[in-house]
Length: 140
Length: 175
Image (cartoon, rainbow over all chains, first blue to last red; front, top):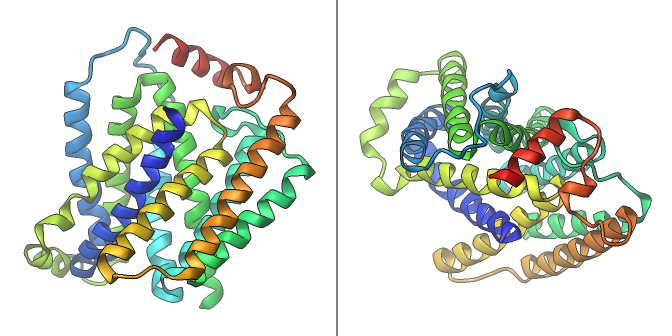
């Protein structure tokens, strides 16, 4: 169930790249980011209105609530910057590399409450294979 | 300039992983729906600031809005679904495994979309997918061995360290 949701998130990512890219052709990278987040805010409001409030939900939340949106906007801005200077395949490959390395660090230290999965040298071979696969896909 | 572009692209990847983790952390505190709302509210503010500060002609951008086809506007709705899916899944698995699973979906969908739009799929892409899936399976096996028998990727046993993480985990069990 949960692995499937992650795969679905990936399917959504690929579709978003295509759809947001089309919008960026008309509005530019920054303008399209504004429209995407505005329509997203409307959608999220709708989701909040229709979803039942669970008993475990508290209203108290710290400054961490600001991180997700800020990093999200940074993603869009940085990706579009890379896209302009490097083109699609290299931007994609470097973005995936950054994501892979960042998630290993997030896991190892349990950053922002992530479950701790310690890095071990036994995983290096597997990671090399993954990087090789990403490179092949990016170059195709 | 090539260096700047490369740094930006790497930065985008790091920011993507951080955004996912931060959103999941907020979702554990206030629920998936509310954290999704926060994500887009803060994202909108940041986007508007970046747009005004960095876009060469912001007003001219918006005048072009009418010219875009209607389907170009569903990106925000897809983004909401993405954040909901990712917020539900993130507390249940490591960030690294999640990156790879998202990648699997992304590449599979990319191949299908490429096939539909261009009518062909590059052989090198298929080779890359096979390498990627092999690496994923290898890594999951390797990190399970490290975590110890029976522990695997269960957040309730693998999670440790910060109090915040543990309370987040408890809330997810109740939800």
